[in-house]
Image (cartoon, rainbow, N blue to C red; front, side, top):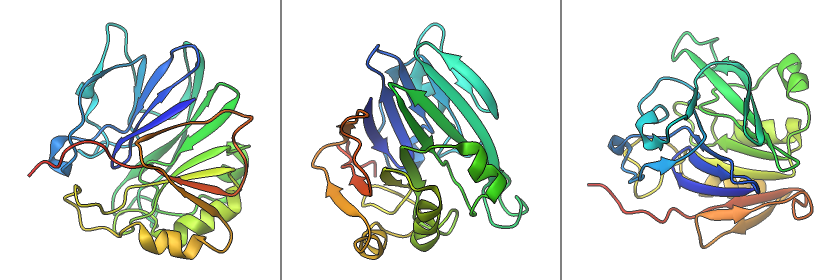
Length: 220
């Protein structure tokens, strides 16, 4: 599976058979420049502008997935788990959907704008998590402390942090460094010089944090 970070919480996943899934595309108001891309499916964890810019997903038969449930898209299975965008049962910011992508023998969970620690029943329903994409910036989501708490509960082999402050992002949330500083005791951190990483069951490893680099331009 090829995992490419396009900015903020937006990722493009490409399977070995060519299946392409765009996740949580964000609009230009975020400060990220993301070009439209041909895909088989696009997911949106919730209906906010930095996660629902579905027009970036091109193709004649694009599957637009914005609800919980189980969906089959070519070589992938996509499962949506309902959660909340805050720690008060959705009172502040409404709902959020975590999407599990099963593809190429891997199980990748994109947590969207998760704002709380999911309960034991939800964690059990998730099953094995090989790769976890998790927000760490706080303010609107879990912060770096809560994100690492969830990592300890789910035990993913690989963690990919997202939804944190960068020079591109026009949003008042926390930066990456506090997460990495706190994680250094128990996780091996790999800071990549590119925006994508290819992960297979054989190369998965364990207790790894992969930090991808945004390669686009700043929008002023």
